[in-house]
Figure 1 (cartoon, rainbow, N blue to C red):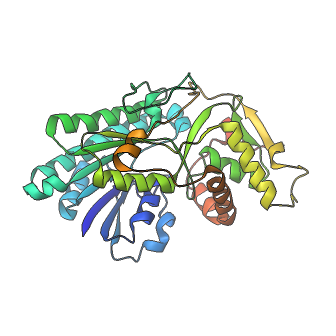
Figure 2 (figure 1 turned 180 degrees about the vertical axis):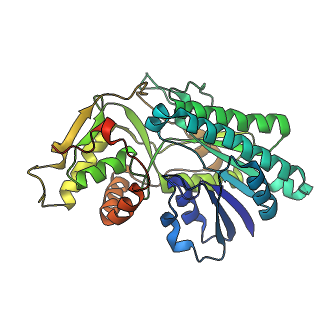
Figure 3 (figure 1 turned 120 degrees about the vertical axis):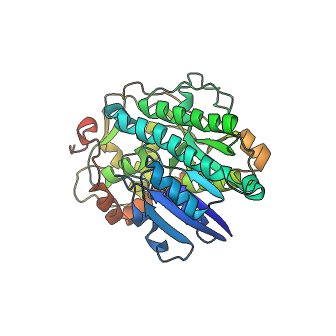
Amino acid sequence: MKKIIITGGAGFIGSALIRYLINKKLTILNLDKLTYSGNLDNLKNFVTKKNYSFIKVDIQNSKKVSKIIEDYQPDFIFNLAAETHVDRSIDNPISFIKTNIFGTYTLLESARKYWNNLSPHKKNKFRFLHISTDEVYGDLKNNRKFFSERTSYMPSSPYSSSKAGSDHLVSAWYRTYGLPTIITKCSNNYGPFQYPEKLIPLIILNALDYRKLPVYGSGNQIRDWLHVNDHVKALWLIINKGKIGQSYNIGGNNQKKNIEVVKKICVYLDKHIKTKKKSKIKSYFDLVHYVKDRPGHDFRYAINCNKLKKELNWYPEYNFSSGLEDTVLWYRENINWCKKILKKGFIYKKRLGLNERP
């Protein structure tokens, strides 16, 4: 039975990965610092599972992380521990530098020391998978171009710069020390349990509370949307069958303007919520409120994931329209989860005008 460590397992993608893997023949150790976006309620149905355990730890703590890895003896490590929100990185870049760069370094060194002492057989089987983002590539100006694994890094924000730095460390630990690492870079994720400062859940929850729906600039920025369940299936496939030292792009083949996504959310809310008792609005789209654009805002991301399709036969399964509608319904039906997690962290109310009603 394989033993795996997932860092950041209480977050959005990490918890989705655990939910996907929990019924496989594995033992899973979840390491998470439990910052504002980490929430063990994402995994409350699995706390009694014999093959699941949790340790609260900061990946920057080298002594604790090294001891945990040595004691647990993992076959695979998934590194999903990261600070990920662009707006937060603009306001407080140092926490991104510490977690995403120094934290990754600490984890790599702990993994390397552990790996060096393994038997040849276990050494050959061990894998370290580092989950990154398409934002490390920067901005696409030409609508016909796509990010490939050969695209040069040109990050725009403190967040994407810190992730680019962590990617380079992972590559260096493979090239210099031989540590069997793989890097994945995904497009924008969506789905249940996403922290409500990201676009889709933020729009849904504001609409449900009849608050303004903040849209940066003109709303014409383009993103490629990937359902989180498609993402985690790709991660499991890559760590088992991907080539060490390689990088794989993971995209959903769903390029949409931000304003299109907001309109779709409003359509689904209008469809499922017939009465709007607290407001005189005719449609939830009446709540849209254009705000000043984010500094250094990238215009377009688009992923070419042909390498993943060709080498590992992976294809996204979720249709964006139905996946988005299901996500809207999930947030409506899990409003108590949302209220509980929002108490832990500050949302950008002042910047985006989220306290205002129309």
